[in-house]
Image 1: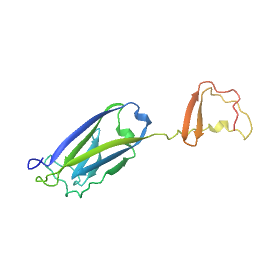
Image 2: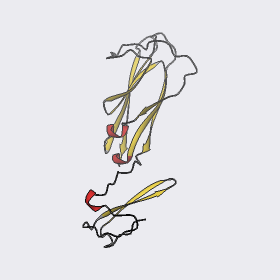
Image 3: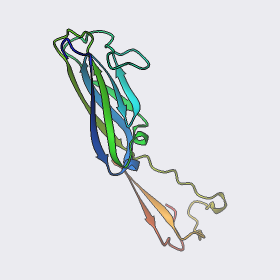
Image 4: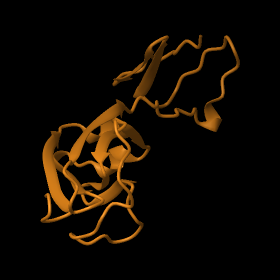
Length: 166
């Protein structure tokens, strides 16, 4: 880059096998001097760069102070930006000055498993008093088990004819 150009374009493909299990996504990145990062074509982070479109010969706003810190960007809807199959993380990285003798960039994505349980509601016409028994018309029910470290959900194809309420 020295005395030639101020930016480089980088991309990394990766595979996702169960997009629905991914909640938020976190990008951790460090740069000397600035970057714009996209996940599958959607901008998810920008550091030390002007807003809007930046051309290939653009520059970072200022020289980064060293040592360069690792920054975290939490993308709450990151799971919705991912695809089952091949995904692309892209970065356009910039130096502040074409005569700069240094450049550095590193980035990584991590995700949080989407463990938000579905809200299960009982039909209003099937209200049962505490301790009473009731026959439900449906033969299929979801069972939600709560544990101190999370939950598990199971679907039972045949519900008991006389379910007990605990």
